[in-house]
Length: 217
Image (tube, rainbow, N blue to C red; front, side, top):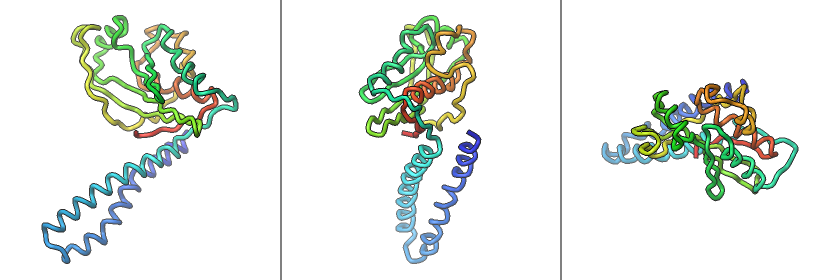
């Protein structure tokens, strides 16, 4: 795990630095363009650089934060059943199946948990999207957050649009190794941190024999 953290910390400054170096030749040719044309060219270069930086960064993220599945192999339907099993448990996490995805979030629409989230002053709702790639037996984990306002629980809870956020790299949890562990926890055992969603989901996927990769989108 430490190696992954170090590689991530190394890539974060190196990638922008590389693009700054690539900008130098264009900056050296600035006198060959009019000021307006150079500004337009610079804007186009910036847009292209931002797009490619996101794509390269996402590729590096998936390669660095990759976890191989166990030797036991299960089908896609069995994997989905194992992930959706959380819905039958008395826990604050909910899963929704959407075609090739399973989306996890907090049970903010249930009175018990909604009231607890409101008392804790929760303002952001964590969401974990699991995109299933059956061809490569890989599940891509995508982190998202939404603004949330608990006006009246649970009838009036306002949530915003899903926002791209940096992936939660600290996904380990001592209490939650797989989704099955939710059944043994009481409400006061939760910190309501994203890792309490991501850790057992990762553990369940790996236990089912599927690989896990982090992704930005």
